[in-house]
Image (cartoon, rainbow, N blue to C red):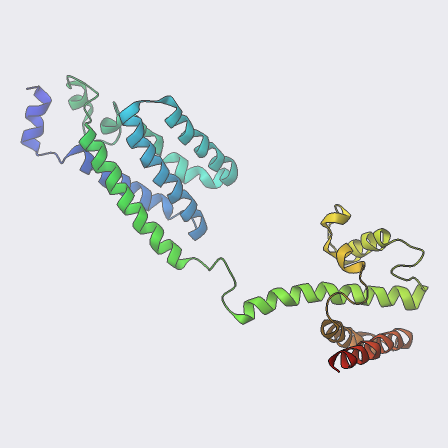
Length: 273
């Protein structure tokens, strides 16, 4: 029996896996306090995978396991930048250093560590206790974080309506532009000027980045001016934009809108017969 083992028995040291679990729990709890809910979720998912890798690395000692962890850590560093400092400073990678982790985490004093017959004195049971405890802890933390997270989908008719309103606003903006160009400059949407040129102008005026026609929702709508979808939607949009021109006494534009509005209402009425 080594000198250190005699000392251990006198001091009643906790089991190594239990001790490391307590240290890791405190480290993780402290470091997560620096981050918001979404960041905590991402970092906990990273740690969950890390402790799985620690267990596998202990069994196999395959360098690719640690490399996978290190690559993932590097990607987080690139993403978080200076915000990653609190997490990085905890040096969770030390849990892969089975020969020194107990000394690093102060399980042994420097004197005790130097008296060890073998530095590699962690057992499979120690690693099992550490990684199982961390899995249970992190699973619990993640569960409650998910409960605090905003839903990742519309949860009410109001949410769905807000999305629809955003789409309708673009339609209404395009209609307004269509009538301004038609009344003020006698430019038709599908006249001598191409739809492509109209699309690029609309992107400029509506403050939307233009890449290609194929990626442009404005282009897809502009090809169908003035009727984007249903007659009901067109009637709704025409009634929405008309007051803006009425307030400015832009009679020519109002007359064009009224003409198309009347035609749409008649067509809708006839369709019901």
